Image (cartoon, rainbow, N blue to C red; front, side, top):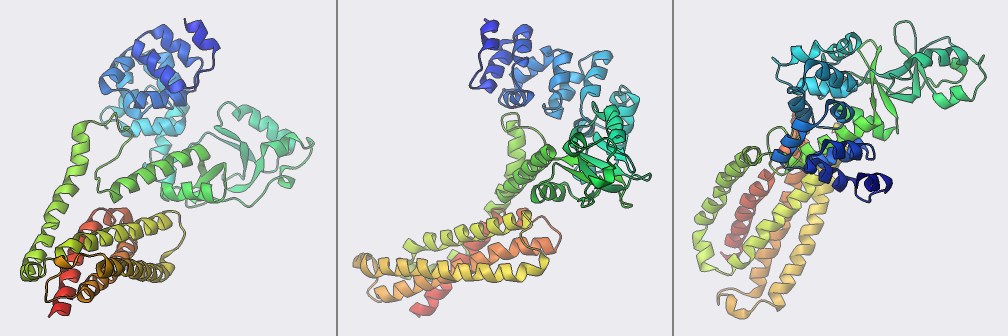
Amino acid sequence: MMEDENSIVKPDNVELVIEALQSGSTERIQAVADVVHPGDVEVAFERLDDAVRSEVLAKLPSDLLAEWADYLHAADVERRLSTLPKMEQREVLNSLSDDELVDLLQEMEEEDRPQFIELLAEDKRLVSEDLMRFPEETAGGRMTMAMATISEGRTVKGALDELEVLRDEAEILSRIFVLDSDRRIQGIVRLRDLAFSTWDTPVTELMSDDVMTIEAMEDQEEAAQMIARYDLMALPVVDNENRLLGVITHDDALEILEQENTEDMEKISGIGGDHGEQAYLQTSVITHFKRRFGWVLALAFLALISGWVMHAYEEVLTTYFVLAIYLPMVVAAGGNTGGQAATMVIRAMALGEFDTQEFGRVIWKEARVGIIMGSLLALCVVFQIQFLLPSRLIPETLSTLSVGLVVGFSLVAQVFTSTLLGAMLPVGARLARLDPAVVASPAITTLVDVSGCIIYFSIAQTVFA
């Protein structure tokens, strides 16, 4: 049966892996591992229920764990590691790439970490200890030291001889850094340029001295953005004296951007806590509850302010009951446009499309957008009130014109202020060195709900007076 599976290219390798993992057959899992990419295994593990995943991990051979360890979540690797003999633990740990090994060690409880560090080969232990000096979300915390370097002053022949020693250790060989005796970067040379040049050609004739670098303590998101902006295969990470420490590769940049985007999406949606590495199906119901309930509770009580505003204008609402028809629309228009403005501004800031000196231009642009949208929306609603609203819904003391003026002016004011608020809050948060995504959570919707009620009833009271 497995011979057929191995000889046919499957359209969905993830489903194939899931079936093999759920079968509990070590032979079948091993056979599938021979024909699929470990990336498919990662996705398959994320889709398993916690109970099934625990059973699979308990039976997973150490050689397969070593093969997949770079792709599995750190929590899963640690869970299986804790049940293995020390010899097999050593095999798995030493199979990990530098950056994944550090991620695993950082995820562990501090008291458990030393026993695993002791199992590492000496060079692996030194590298991991160097990398763990940097916080997890900095460029230094995400770099790998498995890079290709050569000494300055080499010819092509000398450079190739030097690279021969590194070929099995370097994570990326297509970009090679030329270093001086103090490990400062003098330039970068491509492997293909070395391959197609004569052996006596000096490397200095082939290298480019236009090298982008980032300091180790800079934020990981800045590193990922640089890799995307400048189309880099690898970004060198340096210390404050410009000495090369490691590199962040393009695949790590993709992972960083995915992680940062996930965090921003969750903050915008009012989801707190640490996302961690757990996929949605692997995260427990209690964890989901804890991360969401705090914001929901706070905003529920904040929304009570809208109730107090309506109570304060109870006489207006009772006398002119037609206002109740359009109140939800006015309030919702503010929430929608405020949320749109906040999302656009946060996205632009995340992509580095403007800096702090241009915040004034951003606010002015969103103010104009708000005026245009509010005015057009108001015209549409005034038309509906003037020609489509049943006359029996309008009190005798009012006219369709006066109702249209109240709703129209309210929409213009609400959309304008909400758009402005949606833009100003993230901008203000950035100036105050806070996370813009936090202030752009559902709190914006709640705030504009309150402002919408105040604007609507204030204008009604003025027009109908």
